[in-house]
Length: 146
Image (cartoon, rainbow, N blue to C red; front, side, top):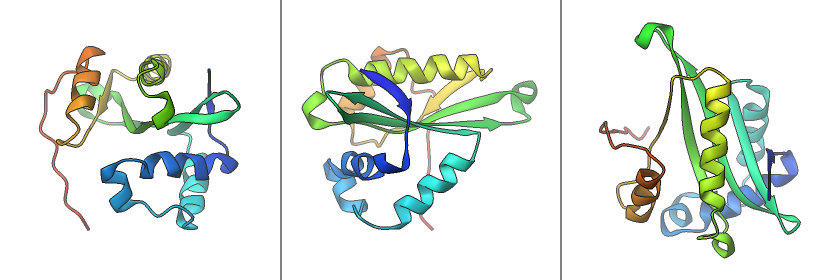
């Protein structure tokens, strides 16, 4: 398995993984040109890292890592993991753990003082997975749809 920066030609495979669960199926629209526009914006931003995991000649996992500078914690940078997905045929293979471990190490190398993530309250398996990797449910996240 290889973890590498995502390329424009990876967008359809990434979107397919985002749409391949009950939550994603209700909010994603594979083939929509806005994904290509979003990819171009992500690729142009040095504080965004979108990666894919490649195995058996195809894209089988993905995540986005965002670096946010701030004034709190004495001007610290935080890293946020988003959009973690593993292709259904590769779930349970250790690929998700490898992606998260890669993201944590990348955050450490770039000087972030912590790594944070959110996961939908309905994703109980994901909660156990992240807790097993050392993440702690220390905050309550809130969202306001616009």
